[in-house]
Length: 313
View: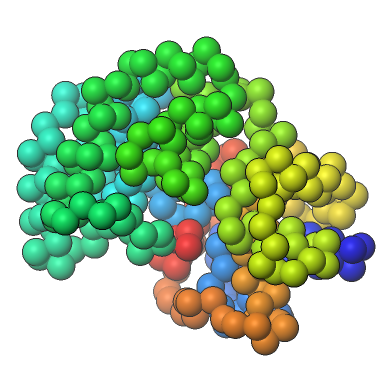
């Protein structure tokens, strides 16, 4: 187990070093690791991914003074569509006009403009109608109608887990809980949930994180874990993070349960390549950096990304 734990934290260190090197404006190659050099892996810290950085800089952040129910709804809309290009054209919602949102989605799709993210799949959940109608009428409208109640519940419980469970009751946000998890993680960086009680004790373990935990514990990769066991094991990794990351460039204070959960998923992808068990769906393509400003600091200082290939997959 020690060897796999070292490998896991080694992935975090090397992937973050790549990010820092790119942010500093250094030319490629940014790593000698052939797997990390040739395949697409996202940052250990979600806050450093391109779309999330855009969101913090242009959409909402900890200094946002707008009504909390607006922040909640706009966060949901942003993640349900998933692209900064759409958000920039659509604009922030104070008084929502669903027909405008539907028409804009349809117009952009017709013009072959980037609209829905390719980083994750928004299904129609069995509804036989255009995606624009499903997303607006069935996934977003109930959130808009209940936005004040949702914020009241979230702020009363002040936990990511309970907020995730409550949001997950709405159509389009439940199931495995991926979309609800995206939103409550974002809300952690807004005035809605700036200091949740469980940031360092809970995360929603997705299938990739579960496979990562199975690798750590030398179990069959197909073994299912309930959320309690998965969280117990992720907390064990968080407890020893400082031991394995000490002396590295990784900002250890910013390593939370979300970092562990997400990194387990990405490390599982890395191990699949290394062990010839499969390959990630995306190759890494070195394109001209779109932002070479050498601004370095901690995750919470919002280090700018440097390439369009920083989207989270």
